[in-house]
Length: 456
Ligand SMILES: *Cc1c(COP(=O)(O)O)cnc(C)c1O
Image 1 (tube, rainbow, N blue to C red):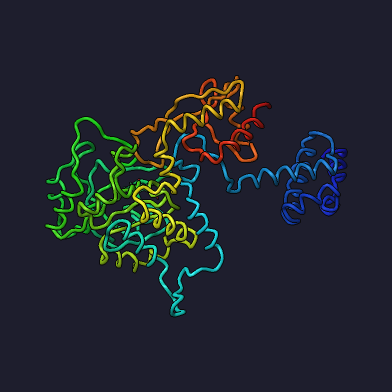
Image 2: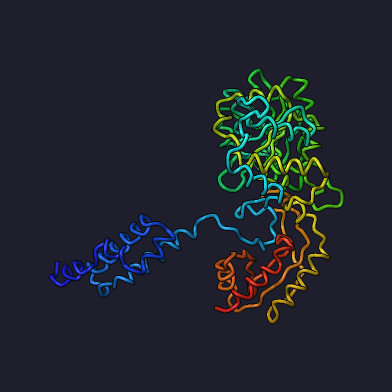
């Protein structure tokens, strides 16, 4: 080791001295002493490496403290952060799918402390975590029973494990779906302990295919909604009604993984092609599974609705504990279900309000916003998406504002770095803000945030 490098390294300050530096006071207030010490250790280590490699002068104390502060800020920026969704994708998976209603938010806040999660107020005894929320879901869906777990994938896993472990589940080759984030139906099936029996072909499956596959080992007939893709052309699939009838005749329950969870049809809306929970129940599915945070518009959850005897077996399975709902989910889900019970199309649920928002109103807002933003901002007709792996072929006529710029990526990055990050669409020569997914109450805030991000 050359003598002068060893000397330079020995001129680095002690950690304690850095922690006593006046510039360290604020970071210690913000992040805590331990975190600042850890970050400073990292900076000292980096400086030691640089000096050993003969790079750079010995850093000054205040530079080390500032570098540690920056590192802490970058690290903390990873925390869950409120954003404004200007993408036009209503159930944006990366942005947390459905935004909660005001009532659901209030219920979450109220449930954050001690609650009656598993407590009977009347008798002062232990109560059921899911009985009340299950009763609301059953009422909303018109079923004998219902339960709720952590998410849709967990709901299917639990149903398969509880009702088909070690036995056979018959499913069409045309419905072996993959949803984003490594959810693949055959893998879920394998994890549950059920044996998958595939019938039919990718594009055509007939009732006779299912019938031929039924044996003494058959535990369930499974129908899966192709929620995120379409099969077009020479196709054939079996309706849930026909499948359920076959199942009843053969004594094998039918489970419908509906995924998107639209409760009932809304005439003239954008979702007329979407299957509904109501129709699935009416068609005779013994259990229907869907997510809480797709078209129901509530929190992340997986709902299972249908026959009480099958639900009892699900609730008593050991996995039920592992996939249970937490108190915040339950609070938001109850508030969301109450909204659906009050109203066939509860527009207090933000996702539903956004999906059904009148395009003329969105146009007015886009024109107002473009005028407020001034030069370079242009109101435009655009198209949004339902998102969340629902209604893949459906686009939502919408309006937005384009922000002309020579550097769309740069502007989009500055918008993401705004005090409240604005997530926009980046196109070839502009950035687009689609207003369908921006609550009207945030329009003025968006204007301020965009004006503050324009230059840079
Ligand atoms: C979305 C979806 C799931 C998974 O639900 P999560 O709530 O995301 O876990 C399962 N099946 C279908 C058909 C879906 O669309």
